Length: 108
Image (cartoon, rainbow, N blue to C red; front, side, top):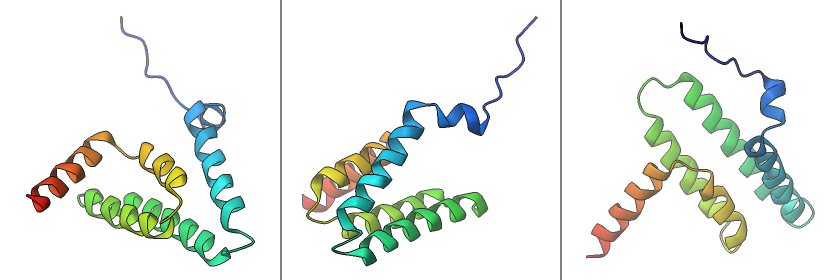
């Protein structure tokens, strides 16, 4: 007899490493920009919020939404490579692989 599926609750997620790293990253972005460029932090949060909303309401074009969010965040975090690397490390690896392949084709 098979086991029932595991149900993950928000409380379970709050204790996960990925969840905590996500909040740590958002806090680091906030600290970096809140006093010197608060509009960058506000636009960053708006981009994440828009991504979340769009992916909840999208049935097929999540790649396009991800691309748009990635481009927005890249522009916002320009010159802050440490933050951009952390953001990109949270993106799906297959998406990043396709982006790198497309960039390589454009350069050749």
